[in-house]
Every structure is written in structure tokens, then in C-alpha cells.
Image 1 (cartoon, rainbow, N blue to C red):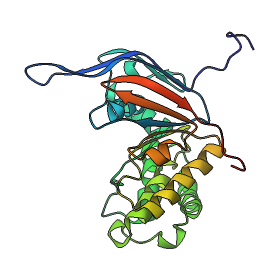
Image 2: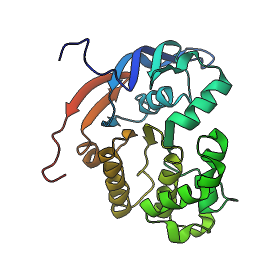
Image 3: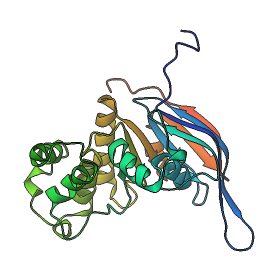
Length: 240
């Protein structure tokens, strides 16, 4: 395959710089970062607190904007979008999973999963309930569909959050420390769920402090002082 025939990356960051105005001395969180991620990759971002991992994910999700450089996701230069355009794009293209779940406390489990569908208006209204139930079945939470988040354990809430991230069938899942607030058994279950999603050709970018989990992703990027300083490619496990 020639370079001209190679598939375009699903995610492309080109010379991305992010500098925050802290009032006195500007703080540069990302320094000329270049990154290409292709469809179906499972990428782990590892590094110490303050290294730039979360800022890097925020560039990909459009939660934050680069000071300079380009961010192209699924063919869209998101650094050029207005706030309204960005919100609509994010609802259709990126599923975000947070460390502390971020479920709306006054909505039931199934209402939380349906919410992105109502916002993005990608799924026909008559299909949303059935799709939400199907997603809850996939994460083994269908029997909790009509409970409020306060009635669920942390692991259960994270499963619901993953179902919500899949609501509009986005090509990319971005997860910022998704197992950081879970016990080891539950963290393993969540990670296994991510592996199953990758097998179904989802692309996952995961920030983690867990070196064991980082050692199991297909591609691990070590971030330090705002730069990707090391990349490790892991072979697929036998039987995986």
C-alpha cells in the first residue's frame, strides 16, 4: 500500500499547542502535539497528574480548543467550529465517559441514556426508548432502567454512563479515568466492556493512571510535560 492509498486517520492532531492564561506566567499544557488515531484503535494515555493527558482528550472531544494547531475528527476540523456547531458535532461524533459518571440525578437510568438522543436528534423519536433499552442490555443494566442514579452502585453508574456515551452510535469514545473511582473487580468489568466495543470497531481514547490497564490497550502513549514522549504497541492477546 502506498502512502496515497493509506486510510485517513479518524483523529488527527497537527502541531497542537494549548496555553492557559493563569494571570501572571502563561502555562503551556500541550506542546506541538502530533497524533493520528485510526478507526478501531484502543489508545491509552498515561502520565502523571498535570502531564497534559486530560487536556489532550479535551482537544479531541472539543471540550477545549487549541491555542494553535489543527484538530480533525472524522473529517471535521473541529477547531474551526462555532460553539453551537461544536455542541451538535460532539453529540453525534463523540461519546464521553467521565471518572465520576456525570449522570443527571433527577433522571432515571433510561432517561439519562435517552438524553443525548433527544439533544442530537439523530435517532428518530419513536426508536429512542427501544434503543436505550438495547444499550442498557448490552451493559447488563436493563433491569435498573427505571431507577435513579442514587439507587445504583458506582460500577452500575459507570455502566449506564457507557450506555449513554453510545446513545447516538458515535465513532469515538473518549474516557477520562473511567475506572479511577471503581474497585478493581468493577474496573476490570468496565475495561472488558471497552475491549468488546473495540471489537465492534469503535475507537476508544482512554486516560488512565492504572499501569496494568495501560499495558493491555493496543497502543499506549506516555504524556509528560505536554508532549507525547513514548509510544508502546502491544500485541493482541491470544484468544482475544
